[in-house]
Length: 235
Ligand code: ADP
Ligand code: MG
Image 1 (tube, rainbow, N blue to C red):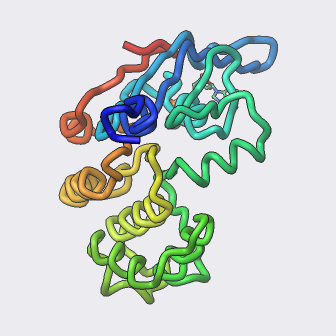
Image 2: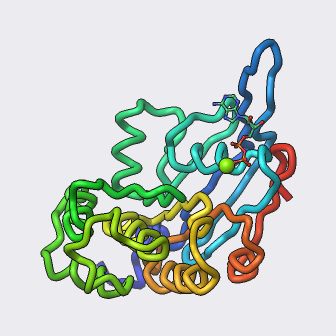
């Protein structure tokens, strides 16, 4: 079949579609006798290449939103699709499989295993990939995040900025379409913060997107778009 005869939807179904398509998300929690609406009718679409910041006061629903987009929690209403695949309302196993395949999660606390050095942490994170990457690829990723000289260092000996970059490398080693970050720069200097942002911009896959929760006006300004959450509503 020639290219001209191919259905365009068949040629680039994933690359052209949104990375995240979350519609009408509601999430309620019970606290004592009281019901808390953590998210009320939040919809969010992330296009390939986008870096979007989520800002809002404490308790406004930011972490709840990230958990739903990671498939770590299920919405009480609405749905989450990542790269066209339904992530919400599946078994925990199904969600874990999709997460391993499609999503990288970056938190403000270190996700590194303390008894493994930086390179072995990367190797461990890569082992969840369908095909393990060659060592040269892992070393090249460490080089990209400026940690080539720290490959054999234990996580506890890393500075705040080095820890953030090592976390970024482990989140990206599986080649995720979606990177989710909850205040990734909360513990680092302004210079390290700018470096981390530029690394995300450079290293996220061409068909990938990033959603990052932040309190930093500099991070929000560097993002392509800002979503404001107040009392569980987005604007
Ligand atoms: P943020 O990350 O913006 O600070 P969260 O998403 O953590 O906000 O929380 C939003 C609201 O939902 C808050 O009122 C919080 O207390 C409540 N909440 C979040 N998770 C739970 C939970 N597991 N149980 C009860 N209430 C929760
Ligand atoms: Mg939070």
